[in-house]
Image (tube, rainbow, N blue to C red; front, side):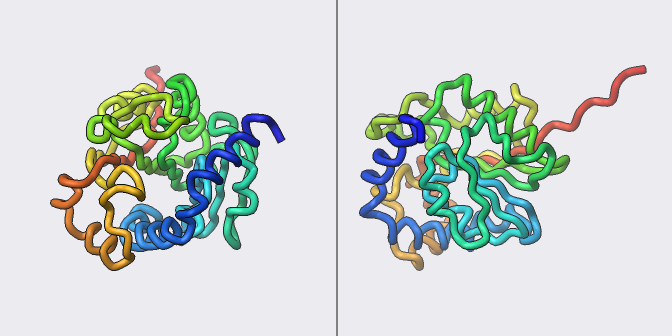
Length: 227
């Protein structure tokens, strides 16, 4: 185990340990009531920087893959989830053009801009033609006051900058919701499953409480060579 991987284990164990049950219930509702509409149930789905695997463990798909630099991903991955320890921009265990959906949540703020770019290029490599990238990302436009409350946040990014990065790496953005979920599970997001379900059905509440953006993008088709 590398020193970086060991540090990640300690950091995220301390941060999320006391919220395990709450986060699991939250993601179960989020996947069933919102994210599933973007994921066909026969799709191959890859969760990049999967962390505690809350998304990939709760989404329905034909094949589920999880990648994270933290070796805890190997024990956090649920039954039927294939887990791999690797960096986001060198996913050597994932074949090119083999994935229908890639999901990335709350990750880009933790890495330098050049790694955001190399990660997006790697995602583009593994996606099949017609595949899609789903991104849930803290939007510094709406959470600037608390953006630096976490020690490992190093890159401020908002939905406009992310859309520009996606365009520069060969993606077309199909959907950009600048304000979707609140910033953290410690914020004003309703914590009970019923209240979370209700929140998801009321987009007006997103505009009041949302501080994370949700984006859907697809790789831009290669241009035909000019003869």
